[in-house]
Length: 405
Image (cartoon, rainbow, N blue to C red):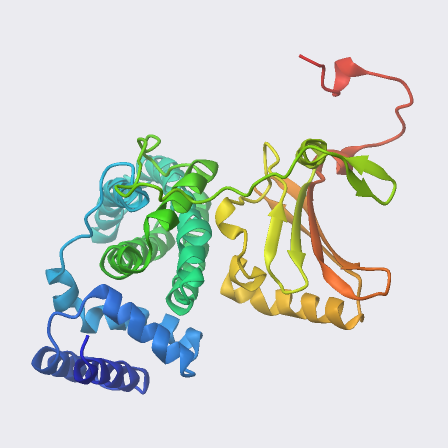
């Protein structure tokens, strides 16, 4: 992008955030700047955020950005990718989501067009089932948050990712409102909340395929895509079968694995373990463990068979602040600040999540001199523990303890 074109685009975005008329700005864009790519729009947003434009302001107006640049974005070709490539997989999930959203749209449009009393019971039954299916979008968004966004951050681009994550959270909340309205049996509320969240989901497809995906293709190399692909299966797929195998066109592009040095014992405070023994022990613990070093960088998580919250290799090396939704970052910062200053040594939360009672604890780690060396996160499904009563002093494998297969 030449400097003049870049300046015009930045001025348009600034004027938009200053409350400029969308119609006039759209006309000005059409007269002065043509053929702007989604990647260039994303890069402009990143520059403006770096220059001090609040991320929250960008989030509030990102739909208007798309509206101003819609003609240019509509003319842009869809990013090319082959089956099995992470972007191809995400695009296939979008196509599946659009089909499901179309079914919901048909029902809601019919309810909006006339009295719902006769048709509502049957429509409500359908909507309960389809709304549950729509919730699969969570896997799609998690792949972006845990796989794509870390790779962009490694390239110095974090603003657009944070903005998009905040919109994900809006969609998550509005999907819950829609499902609740259907469960409550309120057709008017179901129409209002349903049409709203469907539009948000469709707008997100445009932002992905016209802005995010081109930006990723432009900035990431084959080694990045191999890393993205590696974490894909850990999260799963929304509505589609597992993606076929994929390998980059260039040779030697595979992301390097961390070398495990030797199998000799590692001296510990009270004994010694090999790297293999330590790995087995951490993965077998009935809880999830993550470690953030003193520089706020995620350097480890335990690969337990059934994690409570998803983690993928994409989080390793990522700043912990970027691993949380934007609305939660201030809490993370408060905890780290209190740990680093020595004001606090632990913090704990407990939540109900998908039918589980989850206990989350954070512990400050300090060396022998008291210097802060990082934070340990321990997450445990305490549902069963919470139900325990009385005592059990005898071995009883028949009533709850696992047998060795």
